[in-house]
Image (cartoon, rainbow, N blue to C red; front, side):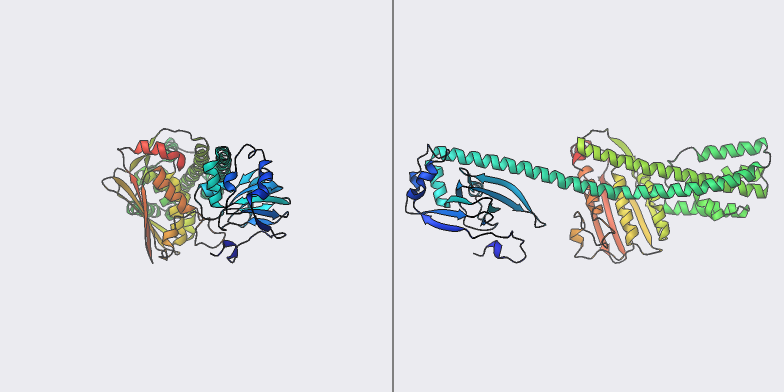
Length: 503
């Protein structure tokens, strides 16, 4: 049987001087074993049989055992000190334990039924040890209660120490994954807030110029009343009913045409912003009635800048809220905090994410087609993790989409599910890649362009936190991620309570 140490590519530690072994009878080592406190009161005569023992002389830094070697032995250190190391995936070594004169080692793999060794065993000092074969080990375990008790105690302590160390390593891995995922999630709201702040600064400049121009002439009571009403509408709320793509496009075209026919400059820029804030033609007619053509254009451009500023403030508020939610999620992960369940409108959640990612979509001139057919569109949720799902899926769709492409977002209801589909017109996901897309740190993006954590985060949130399902359908020109979330009722609240801490 080939030893694992013979396989190419293994980064074994450098061996020191060679280890010397010799077969000896029990009588040759009996006195040395009896001199050890753990064997002093034990009857070891069972070892006085035809099978010899093995005495090992190991100079300092010599390797006594390597991972994968067999057969297994139970060893007792007569002199010196030994060290056990575990090799990590990166080739580094981690010390897992030491054995000094009078102590034994090697019982754990034997008691667990292993077929080969797991660790590197090397001599820290010039050492001498006695090896018992597997059969001799079981003979001692059967016939020497005191030795059996001592060996089981050693194994228990070593397993306990290893479990503590393994748990610590797992926490470090989880912390690293959490930190990487947090940085991944903070990027989008942070960038959105920065862009909105820059746009807000430009809006303030426009408002200052138009404000001076508009304020140069005295205003009638009707004009002041009209401006106050328009301001009241602008400042009322960031939360507006999301429109489908068709309805929104129709409303934008109708209002922009009306503004253009009324002689308003930048009509096709102002129109979509006013529609998004919920303005209708009837609300703007007071300005047309009470202002002359030139001042009317200034008032509407001033209103457009105010609306844009309000949008930017809302985006900053939404982005900082997302950051706050992420920090809160980390606290919940660390402290298992409990928060009450609440209702969430999925359409509003999707619209908020589109707002945050709007700049990226505009740069590539990607059209977003929304078909919000789910009714009702409200689900029960704990926290706001769904925004992370939409951010990752829409961001990936934007990356995959060609310039001037289209992203389709559709919702509908099924008997037990609220279904959300997010599709793009990109090149598609190769069949060889599909089985790996949910794996952490797996990415097909160029180095430095992606962490490989996005879809892993999405999958864990949908399946663990919401007890939902997620699937992907992909072919060139049409890739769709389909998320199914449980509708109201059933045991969702209880499932959410159990799974929140693990998400």
